Length: 236
Image (cartoon, rainbow, N blue to C red; front, side, top):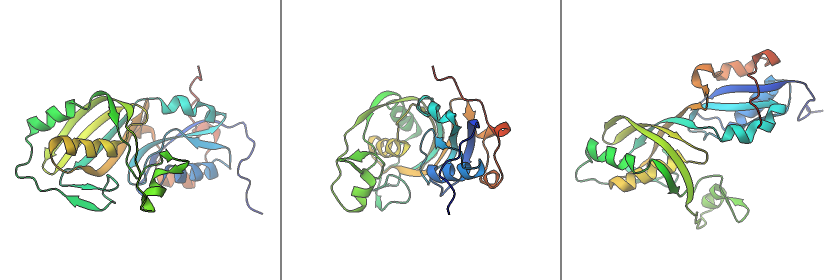
């Protein structure tokens, strides 16, 4: 017989993981759940396989705090490639090269970045988990179907320019729930008159939970016990 999906337990709390490249957020959940002895486990915010960084796992009754945790501000460090667009808005997709007669200046880049700070309307990537007529957008896109996604409101609290040497633009983004950094990379490129797709992405924090306190992949091969967990935040 296979192991039960969940095991009754009094374990409760948070376990923060530094997700490595190539893993999905559900890969993290499965490994944490196994290490915790098959106690009910969920995550508080998806991170794409091509990204690394903070994933908060909620164990036991802490799963009730998922919605609250998903509302916490998030910080991302990202490198944007301005030389091309892709159909996935990241480096895995098919490239559509963009020739630029003269790369935008750093002053122009700063001007454009400022226009994305605040409450904005954003169209999610075609290859995303957004539901369209009851199906995931990425499944429809992979089938070659015409997918039309509507813009939706998101909030970006800050964008800091870390470095710029065309075609690579490195920024730090602080934002709210539901903001796609892939879409931001695409839209920055459009505003600059260049290409724009995500070359790399690291989520450095979710609220007070940071990479400094996150467990690496190797830690998930060892048992997780109550003493390893952070307290569940208040639900009120």
